Each structure stands twice: as C-alpha cells, then as structure tokens.
Amino acid sequence: MIELNKEYKDKLKGIKFIDLFCGLGGFRLALESFGAECVFSSDIDKNVSKTYFDNFNDNCLNDITKTEAVEIPSHNILCGGFPCQAFSIGGYKKGFDDERGVLFLDIIRIAKYHLPELLFLENVKGLVEHDEGKTFKIIVDCLEDLGYNVYTKVLNSKYFDVPQSRERIYFICIRQDIDNKTFEFPKETKINKTIKDILLSSDEIKENLFIDRERCHLNHKYTNNNLFDTEEKRLLVAGYNGIKDHNNNRIYYADGLFCTYTKSTGSTNNGGGIVLNNKVRRLQKREVMRLFGFPDSYKIDYSHYKICQQAGNSVVVNVIQSIIKNLIDTKAIKSYHKFNIK
Image (cartoon, rainbow, N blue to C red; front, side):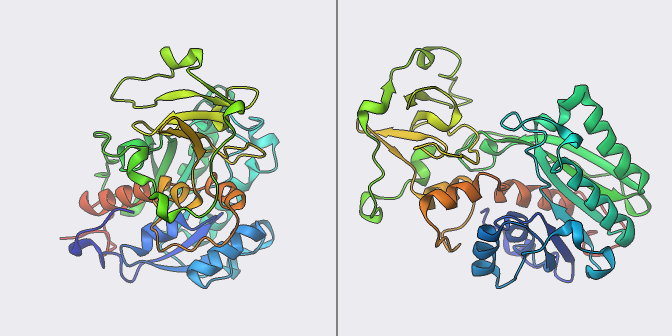
C-alpha cells in the first residue's frame, strides 16, 4: 500500500461505499485508507469470503445476482472489479456470452436504483478490444445512459511501486450533475521497485519453495529477445519451468518484474518463479500479496496455493489509492463536499 500523507487519511470520512465482487478487498483497503466506510460487500467464493472475513470482520458471502438493489444500503461510491474471465486473454473471451460477463448488468441494476455519486470499476485490458471494441462501447453506453460521465484508462501497476507488470482498465464514472469535468488519471512515471524489493529473508521462509532444477529450463531462447526487455520495462525472463513456456511457468530474474500474476489452475510455480543464486524457487505467499500492494498486516491463513489463487484475481491496492488521490486532488466532484477539497 501507499503510505498516505496525514492530510489524506480522513479526506473521505463520512463517505460510504459498497464493495462488489470484492475478492480479497483491495478496493476496500484503498478506500478505507482515506477514511471511507464500507456498508456492503459481496463475493460468491467461499474461500475468498473467509479471507475477507478474517481481515474485515465482515461476511461478504452472497450471490449478487439474487440480491435486490433495495436490500443494499445507500452509498456514495459503488466499486468493484467485475469478473474479467469472460474478456481475458487467459480466459475464453466469450464476453457477454459467458455468464460471468453479464454480471456487469448487476452493477447497472444497482447503480440505477441508488445513483451513487461515483462508480469505480476495474477489468482486464482485453476488455477494450474484445469483439472489436463493441463490448467496451456497450459498457460505456450503459453507464452514460444512467447519467454518468465515464473516464477510462489502462494503467500498469509496475509504475505504482509494485514489481508486477499488470495492465488493467479503470473506469471512473461521475454522475453528470456533479461532475466538474476536471478528473485526470494518475500519470505513469517510473519503475521504483523490482522483485528483490518484496522478497522475504531466508530466515522468514519456513517452507521449501525451491523447484526441482530438472524441470527448469534456464537460458531459454526467449531470454535474448522480446521477453528480455529494456531497463524501462524490466521484465527479465530467465527461462521456464515444466513442459512449456507461458506466464505461469516463467522464471524471472529478481532484478526485474513479474509478468501479470494470474489465477493459476495447476502450475507448480503458481504464477511464475524466480532465480536466486543459481537456484529457482516460487514466491512465498506473503511475497505474492506484496505483488498486489497488500500490507504485511493482511491475514493470509490459507495454503500457498489457495492464496495464490485468490491473489490472481485481485486489484492492485496502490493503483486504486493513486486514482482516489487524483479524484481528490483534481476536485473532480462538485456538490459533494468530501470530494471537493478546498
């Protein structure tokens, strides 16, 4: 997480938000760091809901498709990373033909009833080009028809102090009657952290994380072309683990970045490995959480595999915080004093 200056810590005190498709609660951590209050949360995954409860003492387990809008408390912000598998390169890219894709319509249903000042949404970059851009246009049109001005931008988390190259599209939707039309997304600046900055010391690691070298293919042919990136991109691939090369099996140098950490379904690496002192190991689960900006105080009691599964669908807390900060700094919302900081 980003350590906020004192002036920001209570800026959103009195603001109420709902946390849809909440996962591990990345949106919630970010908004609460500014003093906002969560009044409703929802996720259908039982394992995720336990982790969420352990950290927020809030039972988020429910099916939003069966929850009436009237049952949800009034709120100022509706936030959520609506399910992305239907639009993802790593999924089937079926879009609205996939039942997960139509869950976006539950956001529309709830927003239409409550008309909160702000909708804050996140999804995979692939959404922009899905079905030749038609899906993206439908989503924006639906939001605009509700009476929102829609601002979108693809941001890469590697520019926000986490060593993961993770491109996501973010939606800031401000109700038209209170939009100052001054909002700007934060600018991507420079890379400040690499994998070695999030690693635990050897004394802190109790489990065996090393991968059998017979399975590892170091100095793979891709090492010397497009996957061995410039210093700016910092995606340094040393090889791969297993029988084929894809994101979940790649091995990275600790002086570089991880590629997009995904919800692995069976990889030994669970998202990728690193090479240290000529040995290859996977990340420890706390290190995985650091890839997403979760503080070390965040409780992760599940197994390594389950935590990696849960993290793969998460938002990056640092990026969410940076966008909220820009909402405040640009005085984007009028008529609502907490967003119109003088």
